[in-house]
Amino acid sequence: MNEITRRAFLSRVSLGLTAAIAGIVGVPIVGYLLAPLFQKTPDVPVPVGKLSEFPLGQTRLVKVRDPSPLAWAGQAADTALWVRRRQESGPQMFQVFNVNCTHLGCPVNWQADAKIFLCPCHGGVFYEDGTVAGGPPPRPLFERGWEVSGDQLLVRQQPLPTVKQG
Ligand code: FES
Image 1: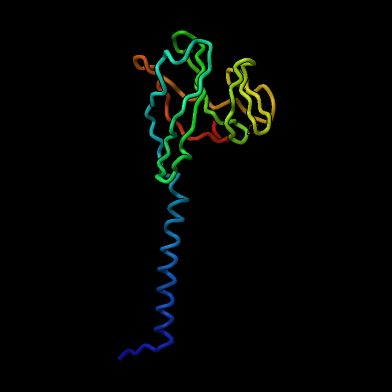
Image 2: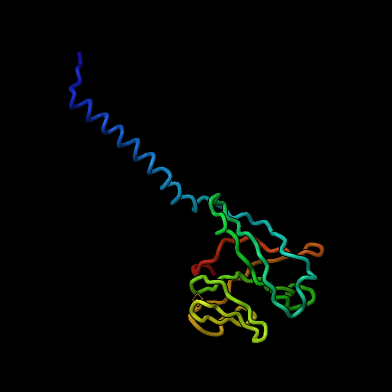
């Protein structure tokens, strides 16, 4: 008969418990790290307002919820966009910018009198068309695709910007 010693038994129990604990702790961590590789951002345009809410020549802030598939994103998924209406109609009618500065992501403010976007964090400045006017931002503001449906402006969903995009 094959007998097991006390030492061997305790060793196997210890290994079993270690494996169980490693699984309990490790599986969620690995899942968290790998999740972005398998998540797709829904490419569904979302309405941000009626065309009449965006007067010609003006830039307006609209609030949107970023498409985050993470259930725990909470308020972190709430963001905003700057909508600039530059023509009455046609394919050049709007420019829609992510609110985040392309330096380190702070929300930029629109200064209507000077017609520039100012970043409060490190003094980045963007012209009204989103191009860099000065400061540390390495590239223009990120733009989002848009379309018009009836009297509504729709904006395409895209991931939160990083400086690696574009
Ligand atoms: S985050 Fe905007 S200039 Fe640094």
